Image 1 (cartoon, rainbow, N blue to C red):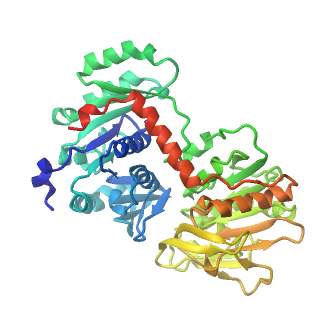
Image 2 (image 1 turned 90 degrees about the horizontal axis):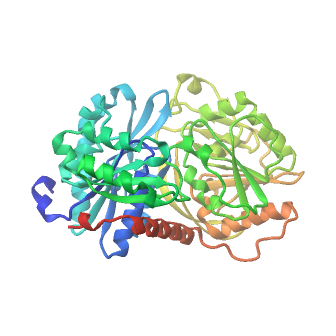
Length: 509
């Protein structure tokens, strides 16, 4: 489909741009998607290029950013990699993995990215847009930009902001974060750096995260409209959202919203942490307090600890060893501690990590075995290709129940026959998806390749009750409210709050 010749036939797309990273683009798109779905429209989210290690795997096995998957849920549709045709997964040292239409196709440095990947990147964006409209001719795209649209050193190679806006002749909304301060300079500076034909695409401005009485900004609103000739279509109050941040650095700022907690969970803040949305279901458990662990310490204050996924497992394991955290984890295990590792965290709990194809970075990794924490008799070998797929299985521990989730990892893990493996048992009927071991002193060590394991309500409830029993706490005596229903409720609440303060009428022509 040659989209340029058919723009008059499609519903006008809405594009959300930001004055900076973290201005609130992702949540704004999520809210608009649900608002339009509720009004009877057929919204579909789109972000041409995203940089994130917080990923999702669609039903075709394609990788995409979790934020676009969440926006698809807000639209009431299945996520698809076409909604995020370019995903860059940072690996440190200005190196990223390049994923096009869900498939890994190479590694690039930041310096060489635009030289080597700009032309194929733009082609895959156009291909995805054409495919979406061919399959959904009556849809309205809700498009998210990336960072700021006026990064002047990069704008000649822009793939996902104003180039997409111009290509689709989209109605654009500029979102700014008043919490950061300097909101007037953010707006005026961004608009002044746009070309006249680009500035004409901005049809509305949203002032996000306003604290206090909204009427106090009325004069500010008038000044912005007078100075820019663009309407302020929304002043959005500060919302206590429960969504994962796009950037792992923001995890440190996340605070538990519950005060009467009786289970404390420690999650290792790995330098190359990935898929931190795995812990959203725990964030929404009223009995649980989550803390992020960044440095060596006595871990006994935690009822269980989690080793999360990692984009660079060997590098993160070396960090744990050098920082003293590996020893802390071993001592915690010997003190009846409960441990669960997910994906890279599972791999680190094993005895050895081997990288014969240098998939984990420096060649030195491929020339020697890296010792794991050594709590599970497992060895992992990183292979040439990674595995990405949706999972439907059944758990054997801590209960028998249906399990859904997804795998996204490099590395094949098997029992280490040089170790005593009599006590280790499979967690799932598919024995390669995870293992667990009960300590003689008490406590369990478990690891799984399944991302989204805590979204499985029965499994999550039984695991939490396992911890509660070890603390002599009363068991959860009612079935957990479905996390996916909670997620729907959170999206609904987000959309309702935006709808109260946002005028979208002019964008729906």
